Length: 271
Image (cartoon, rainbow, N blue to C red):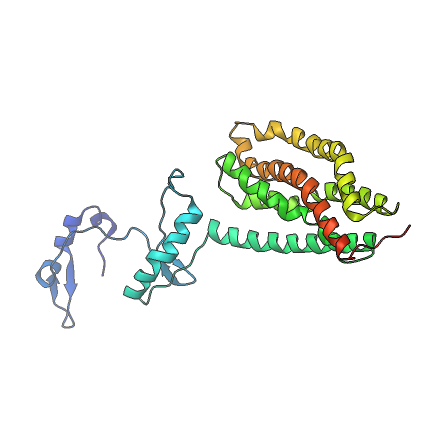
């Protein structure tokens, strides 16, 4: 039994609500029940027929970002709550779930890119050791990415990792240019250590200009203050500072690696 539509405008209408017993007798509701007024649930949300509760809040970026808050919640809060209420099931959805999917996709693309670059360089140098020296520029770029975000006061986000992945095939250009010049001197019969020193000194300007043209082209976007550009700032930061660090370190690290490979007789070339 329920009240008519006209009698549902006020809670006082419950005083006129009657309950019918099995014998057919009509008894006022207030005679068989104690009514209490309190705040109830406005809406019950369910996902796959499971009752759910969604918690929302604003993030104070001066104290922590969303990823740090979620990590702290999973580590310190949820285990205690689950211990107290073992029937509760936790899951992260929305941005957290999409971020995990994007992270796995980028990792797969990064591995494919690394393998592709290694295979191409192996065909070029006809061995499997020298490509590793050339690809050393990739971890060197990570140094610039980390310091770039620190200098720009940015958190390393998913967009930042996209910029790092895009650097995979870009930063090795300087290494290839330097290694090609090293092998040119090796064909002349020079010692690997001398060839590495000479190549680093003679190709310094060409390598620096090759990277600076890309960096200078991205600087206007890096310095942009408009709201629309803020989404791309972490990506550009990764590219600019990653290329800057790799350019400087390549001139030092790659010649050293080639000198070591020469001492180990791992360099092969044809005159």
